Image 1 (cartoon, rainbow, N blue to C red):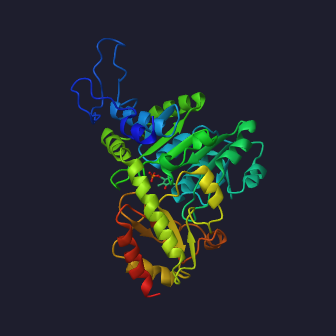
Image 2 (image 1 turned 30 degrees about the horizontal axis):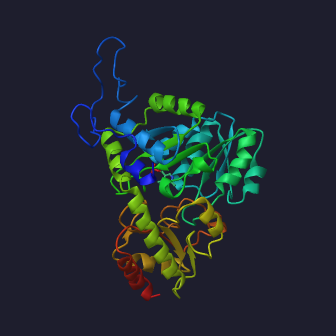
Image 3 (image 1 turned 45 degrees about the vertical axis):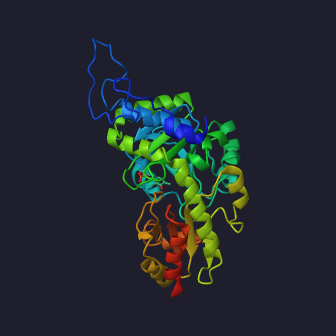
Amino acid sequence: MGFSTDAVHAGQEPDPSTGAIVTPIFQTSTFVQDGLGVHKGYVYARTHNPTRTALERNVAALERGKYAFAFGSGLAAISAIMTLVKQGDHVVCSENLYGGTYRLFEKVLAGYGLRFTYVDTSNPARVESSIIKETRMVFVETPTNPLLRLSDIEAISRITKPRGLSLVVDNTFMSPYFQNPLDLGADIVVHSSTKYLGGHSDVVGGVVVTSDEKAAERLGFVQNAVGAVPGPFDCWLVLRGIKTLALRMREHDKNGSAIAAWLEDHPAVERVYYPGLKSHPHHELAKKQMRGFGGMVSFDVGSLDRGKRVMEGVRLFALAESLGAVESLISHPATMTHASVPLEERLRMGLTDGLVRLSVGIEDGEDLIADLEGALKGL
Ligand SMILES: *Cc1c(COP(=O)(O)O)cnc(C)c1O
């Protein structure tokens, strides 16, 4: 089936007891058994819940994997993945990972004897040269936040596969509509469903997808053993969000492309970061690896003061963290999402004080451009 058909139907059958077309919110903690050991596949709701099962089957289909596991947040999903490695093991990661992922790795997991090296994974040779005897996993985010740098998933998988390393891709920014890492050779895909999958700024969640039997067995075990599961209502919200994922992503992409092109021509803007622009250093890879360029756009206006004036000048864009929902958001990475990154490190990565990040929503493109025009006028 096509993507949009799967988005609406995969994992969801009309409820057999009532015919309800929408998978119900099974707000129950336990399930009555017909007799000792005789049940309908559901025993206790941490282990399995029918609303969660529907979501897991749905996302597995969209990411073209065999198994999916839903969690209470994107970070809970990533922590479950990290139980696939053990004390003494080493993980090669993209530099400039989502801040919460970096914090989980360095402030929590490093204390349990896991070691992480952060490299520019947009250069596969840097991945290869960072592999040591203890390396077990490569963890890639593509595109990255907020500079939208891309890593070549297929090229990296040609490095990880022969060495038996597990390649994990955080696909939150593209969503399965624009990018399917498993098809490109990744072993595990993770999403913060808080973002595009949910899509409406009304839920926090995470999902892991894989076709690897061994990883799936462990992830399913850990999902139940650790218990960082999402509630049925949260699963229902994500399922509802996903039904319109294809429509929303097309609009995000259309608005994102138009705004990036408009910003690139604006005299007050020094630089625009958007994989759909010909000026983007990884534009060719973007066209090869992704089916669209998405709704994340960053641009540099040259200084903190000018960035502040843009942030304070907009009316329609809301000043907020997070991304991937129907409403447009604006943020200032240097003082918001990346405030904890040391200044020198930030500047080395190009994460300057004048950098502004947009999560472009699905409002009318002309209104969004008019809003930015007003905010940039004074500069
Ligand atoms: C938001 C985000 C996460 C973390 O997800 P939560 O749902 O906030 O826990 C991980 N990776 C990326 C790329 C994100 O944007």
